[in-house]
Length: 264
Image (cartoon, rainbow, N blue to C red; front, side):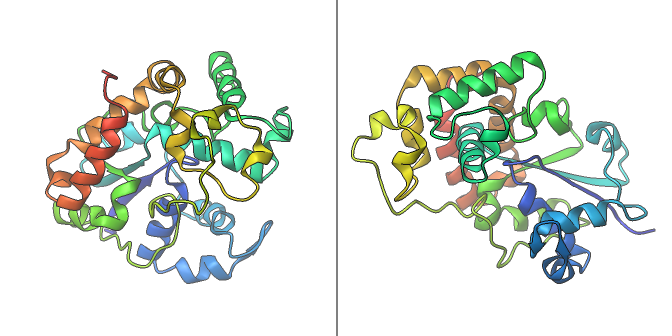
């Protein structure tokens, strides 16, 4: 019987990486990159939908329930909730998704966070802004291995394969800014004002993600109110012994967890 593998991720939380990993394992990555879909050629998520409709590839409704079956190898890719909310803001503004969601075209980040808060409170969160825990993973599971996306290019997948050899994932030479953290070329002259700057202020370069959380009250609101469960799960993921066996992964995780310290 073919190995049963689930690689779970949510939008702006490693979905592109998860798709690449799964399709490469199935020998379909090049096919996906040649596929012409609604976004043209090379948009991997177009082929992901094709793949998910094929027999035996339909994603489960509840990953936690599926992974109680020990025949499955289950991996959930996580992203730091601070980075994810900034990334979702950038995505909304670059793709004009923000306009379709009713946000002004020059929307500042702080106003975007208020929008996210309102959508979460109403139970109408877009897939790009919903909780990683609630959107897919469910309660933390002993049978699910959690892989922080920031560690994938540092040896996280190698560490995963060592403890879950049936996964057989290969992250070499994959390209995605979700896990290959790159600092932008430009920094705003006044980092403390980044959260309140209009989107047009970033025309010449997007500032470092940490600049958006110079205001500790805004940071605490995102971590303690909006994405508390995500922050707790991320810290738990970084404490997994198999992941900490990768020294570079442990260092990266510790730096990320330091930013969500205080959330219990």
